Amino acid sequence: MSFTLLVIAKEPVPGRVKTRLSPPYTSGQAALIAEAALADTLDTVVAAPATRRVVALEGRPGAWLPRGVEVIAQRGAGLDERLANAFADVDGPAVLIGMDTPQVTPGMLADAGRRLSDCDAVYGPAADGGFWLLGLRDPDPQRLRGVPMSRPDTGARQLERLAGLRVATLGTLRDVDTAGDAVRVAAQAPGTRFAAAVRAAEHAVHAGAR
Image (cartoon, one colour):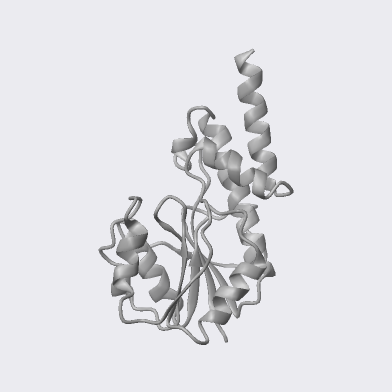
């Protein structure tokens, strides 16, 4: 099935991304971790079998943007509006992820796209109660607008909005919000740029504590 892979992302600027990583990491270290996570995620998107690859970006693109990925600007005030508008701006079946799960693989994204052939929606729950992936065969922005974001019940509330649709559920992933999350996810994907950035930040923290 033809579908778009859509990434919702923020330019990795110190003090504006991954602020919950500080402390123990500095804002600069947090931004480097965010940039590595975004670069890993986009490389995975490029490697996955999609018809179109798009990043809905807050900010400006940088060297982390690979060839073959289009950039559109995020629109809207709250995250629910920005997600809804991103789906609306790409048209047609789409699978959306964020930049917080650098352990995602091309196979996971391919599986999500395949499931849209038989289902109306694909949902990937996150360990913190949110969701790491949402796929919609016939995107309707109203399925997202008004859903409270960044709360323990975000996933449950989003599933309520999918009522009446045939929903395929994927495995649970941990997204990166805190330093503890970063260390756990880095251990799951040790060969990634994200893991290297986390190891460097951890080394700096421990060296400073001596």
